[in-house]
Image 1 (cartoon, rainbow, N blue to C red):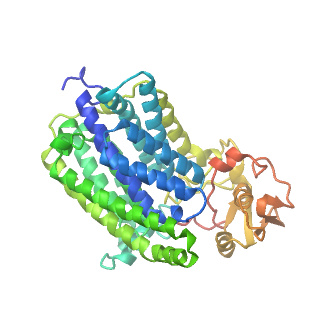
Image 2: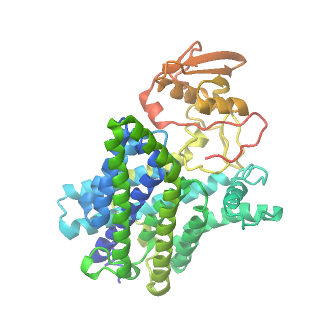
Image 3: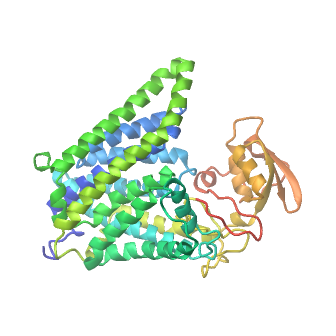
Length: 497
């Protein structure tokens, strides 16, 4: 393949096939994520069941025809609408998922306005989005490593690197917990997460990067927190963007007549999973008119949901590992695209999204949000005018949200009451945001701020005069900004999402 013929790393037929592979994996990620988070959209009331159900149907439709640009766009719209409704209470990778879907929508809309059609549309969309999505994944890894370069992550007594391993070992009791493993786990986490993006970019090591990335994140998915498995599902879709065309020949999902046996089997499995999930959803809606049946259904879901989701993830993970192993072993060409070819973006409105991804990761250091800024399990602390980072400064503040810390004394809310027991603090803005959205008239939180005790009730009503950054009612700020709790003064920043 000549460099001139290489458009963003793909020729038209390769690009159409690449979009089909990505669409299939993206649809499976959507289904798996909905299964892992069943407790949200099976609440049987409000907007969430409608948004979650629409996303489920769109994901199933895309899986059945993964190369269809229109179906990919519909799933992206449903996904953005659902997670947009939940903002800002979404996980780090969920926010990146929203931004990826926005990338897809901007690129699809741009090509549709230019009257691309048929297979040409699929090829053009893939050539537009693939470099951007690769860049967004590399930015994610950049911040995942950067945020971990702090004293508390490098402290075995508080490090998430060791804490996550011990939590996995609690479930898999055959894993050793020798104290001398602490430093290898901490440093190994940093080295592996730094190595994966470098290996993916460099042509000669790209296959090794895919192997390392899949192995590392599959091992992390052994953790009982299903959000980690959801994160890995997202990565599997993004990893496919680094596979060369020859390797994709073995994954010919775009052409059903030429589809490999594994593709047909995985599609059938996905359909079964979708039917089970849809059946549970239909039963949930049907049970709304019978309170006793509805209550028992909810109890059953909470009793067996996590176990069923874990088995579903295990089956999908095994299938992906087997297929990836087969492709990487026998379908990898000697000559693969260079980094410049893979990461060279084409001009579309979607170019703005990687910029947003980059700025989102900077938020903790400039005084903005600390949640969903790609600092998951990093032990990073930047609040209260101090930081535990080894070299990133915190003096360049765009706002003082992180400086206005209040200590929770008591609350009717279970989460806030737990923070009071731990002696942890929250930015005033976060207290106000939580109180503002409360509908329960009995809600209250007692907190200490600047040496005085205050009380806040539902709707954000309080005796304390709030500054503009502490509350003051900005809908956009409440929708975009989210802050984690801060440990007591002098205490290390423990492992937290």
